[in-house]
Amino acid sequence: MKVGIIGAGSIGLLFAAYLSKRFDVEIYTRTPEQSFEINKFGICVQKGSERTISVVKAYPISEWRGLEDFTIITVKQYQLKEIIMHNNKLASMPKNLLFLQNGMGHLKLLDNIRAHNTYVGSIEHGALRENPYTVSHNGEGITNVAVFNGNSQPLIQFIAFAPKDFPIILKENYYEMLVNKLMINVVINPLTAILRVKNGELVQNHFYFQALKNLFSEASSILKIENKEFYFDQILNICRSTAENRSSMLKDIEAGRLTEVDAILGYILEEAKRQKRSAPQIENLFFLIKGKEREQGGV
Amino acid sequence: MKVGIIGAGSIGLLFAAYLSKRFDVEIYTRTPEQSFEINKFGICVQKGSERTISVVKAYPISEWRGLEDFTIITVKQYQLKEIIMHNNKLASMPKNLLFLQNGMGHLKLLDNIRAHNTYVGSIEHGALRENPYTVSHNGEGITNVAVFNGNSQPLIQFIAFAPKDFPIILKENYYEMLVNKLMINVVINPLTAILRVKNGELVQNHFYFQALKNLFSEASSILKIENKEFYFDQILNICRSTAENRSSMLKDIEAGRLTEVDAILGYILEEAKRQKRSAPQIENLFFLIKGKEREQGGV
View 1: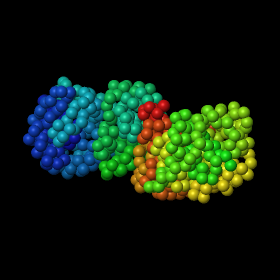
View 2 (view 1 turned 90 degrees about the vertical axis):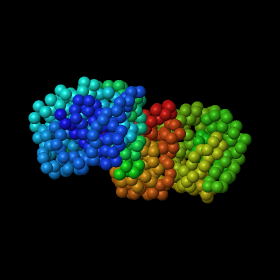
View 3 (view 1 turned 120 degrees about the vertical axis):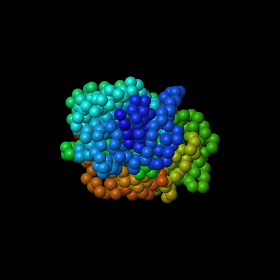
View 4 (view 1 turned 180 degrees about the horizontal axis):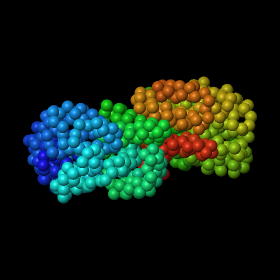
């Protein structure tokens, strides 16, 4: 089975390296320079003190023809529009597309996409790109996937072939799967990024914990979450089990990069607007993060 | 006229030094060590490249008998209870007390204070304590004062004698005077402290400006402010005219000290509770600042 990976950030590199053990993988990069380096050095995965190199063919994104059996789109939400425009202009309609963006803001872009089957996923791996061809796999996790549009068979087949040390789990309901991840991101990401603290601090410091509770309450109400206790306990468990980790938004802020605040808080603000309700805490944090991106020249 | 100054932080030192040009000033310090140093070196005021030394008698606070004609209490709000307990146990009732705390949380402590006349004030000076006997006078400003309880004559007399380069202005309405200062503190202090930015950034960065506007709206509604445009314009003017300054709360956070968040945001939260209304943005910022104090060991 031929698998295409679009985007060669931390997640793109991680998927390309692991999946290349079982599939014929090609990775598409934003810059020709990065393709050159991956073709020269392979993809290097650093996990603890272990270092493995995988040989993967790399091409600049402009060369993507959509001919693979299965294509995984790993770019950030704010880069997705461009990829979808490219996809919709391809000579032949792509077969199976799996989208791995954070948040839920990208779903509206997927409604009219040109593909036989469209899937979405959410990732629980911890990964950090060290250089154009090296990714550090800090946190072993799973990938949840679900059907967004179309037939589940190709997805089931893909999962069955995936390597055992890189588990991919089929979920029945894409909406529940993404809401679940979104709630985790909404609560942990902006607070850790603004406070510049590790995940564990949000439950260890009882003032931060109060802020977390209030934020959870506002977000879960806008998202009309019914089983609140389940979601809340899950967030606390993640704060505890990843206590020493820095959230992706914190890392983005520290590195002066754009964050995924539009995909995460922006989505909830749109949802609140649609419901004609206010979300004062989320709006406040949204502006603080956007301002921080701007202050650091990330825009 | 004998003037007592209680507290020898930046404001206490500044007032003692300037007022000693016209009055017989005594300053009371929290620690005997600080009295010793002030008695040895005098109070040193650094203003630009100019450095002046004033000879002022200093005593530990335990020696305060309340016998001065006019006493100015410059300690932080969270140190005020102790001073008031001391005051209410003095053998003779003090004549005139002027309280210079930030916020409005201290007003309820002043209702039953033992003194002939009680005044309150708000300061617009920029000052930073460099060491136990040196204060840097960074921003020239004025001191607004008003009667809280009692007779205005002693206050008017005090103002008339005050040195011309240290203006003290009588205000008719203490509540309006303090609300005005509180609104400035509520909006500028917590945002600059959490974001770690200078005052000007709040109006130069349009995302921060949105956060400022929303916060102003919530706070002015709880404080039932009628002339909102006047207050809002004033805050913008202060952000612009002090663009390069770091707010007092930011300086406290940077130095790992306790902030005045209880006096500032805490007061509005109490007010909201009394009105049975919610103040989600203010509550969120309150917990973030309290948590930051705790994280840095300031408690």
